[in-house]
Length: 246
Image (cartoon, rainbow, N blue to C red):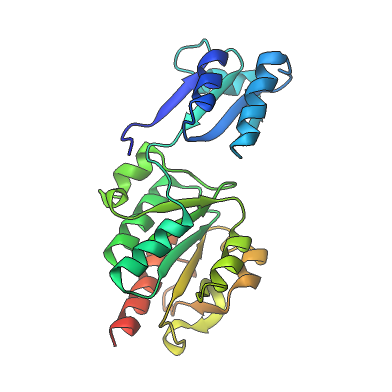
């Protein structure tokens, strides 16, 4: 695993990183740059299914440390990603029904790091995040996880809904957090389970929510009506732990 977040700047450096098989989270390309070298980099990015963001020159200047970006910057993950199969294998090796966190639209690195930390503490076998509209395994995520990234595999997938369908075929069922759902204490949360958590603002997207078997709400007695995403994940996760123990 890598411990240091890294950005790569310059056309040759970025192209060689792709060709060397480096795990690149996102590629930032200056709008309007469509010459041969840039097009070669974009082709390599698409081969690896890397997210390509077209941004202004001013945005690249803000991101650049060298000020010699040549219209392209690549952002590498601070840690390597696992595969979904690695998560299932870990559950099998432990002789436990799979317990997986799936995160939808989590863009705050502190939230992601805290959720990975919680996932480790409750005994979850891994975390799955989408490639788009989500933060990757940045250095901030690694620090916030307080070491949990050493032990808890994180997989990145192209489509969360499709991944849920594939995992259902392997015997998992899914519960997502949403205020409109059934109180979590009234749900049977035992067995091979995927816990789906959305962002604090938008929650779980409609398409992902429709894939879930149950919608769980957390009882709240205060004057405000929402919890931080990482706190909500912790509350629901420990209810799952309570039921699995009992």
